[in-house]
Length: 486
Image (cartoon, rainbow, N blue to C red; front, side):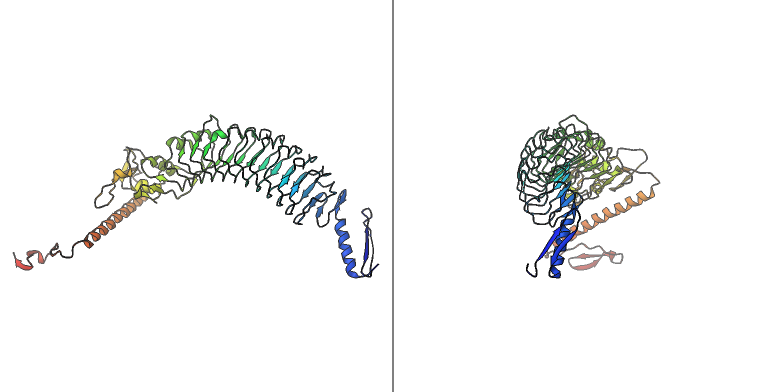
């Protein structure tokens, strides 16, 4: 044997070590190698460079291209962050005791239909962040005890109609960030235990009424960041346990419900960042216990009185970023907002008409007197003002902002606005007085500006100007540039 050579022996039963070495570095290398082999994996040895914790095996970030062998006793296996490109039959042979398997963050492009054969005990399978484009119908059929399945961040373009057949214990399914264009009818029919379903960040353009059939225990559904052009609550029939529905960032223009059904447990709906222009008046009557609603960043111009009447259980709402038309149609919404006791976004601005553009809805309602209170008893007549604390109900004849204009030199002249207020409400009176002064000052400044503009345009050849004599010069008049005494 060469002077630098060494022999290392180790027995699993006695953990004894015997070696012959000629140089100290050889001793160190031999010891490390044997120690790695000695890290226990009950029923077998721990693969080189992997970390073993009793029956849990972690082979992460090792640039592996294949599945380690002789792992028959492992109950948990993590192969995250490697360079595995495919999963085939036999890769997991002998791993019948596995309860969880993580193969995420690899480069997997192909999964053979029989890749998970005899892995009946698996409860959690993570295949996320790979390059999977398709999966065969029977891929998950050998996994009847599967609870959590993560297929997110792949390249799935479609789902086979029986892909999830037999997964009666599945509770969580993650499919976000794929390229799915539709959801097959009744594809989740067997998933009667599912509570969480994420189909966000795909390319869904429409939904079938029975796409979610069988999901009786579903509580949270994600459909955000897709290309849905219509929101119809009839797409979610018999989801009797649904509590949260996310549909933000789609292309929906209308919200309807063509199904006579009531979702008693639905508490949160997110319709924000769509293109919603119209909501059927009866839609929210089917969700009587709704507590949180997001409708911001859409194209709503008004909200029907019937809709407002169904928002009785709301504790939070967002409505900013819509195309609110501050005409008589906004009165019902303004009245509801002024009496709403929950949380809401404060920046609700008018988009039209031009004279109100950019103004807060409630400010515009009071300033331009878009709504009137018909109550006569114990009322005061005030000029345009805002009294949020009172939450007055606006009533009166139909009137548009254009009816309120008196084009006197381009100045908009508004009439008085009647609001109910207690006679001893000194604070409200002061606020109203300040508001009147504000609008009076604005009109005066506008008048002065117009006068200056008119003077600038006067001809420079004009010889005569108006002259108002003071008390001393009262007896003098100017005639043909000479002064004569009367």
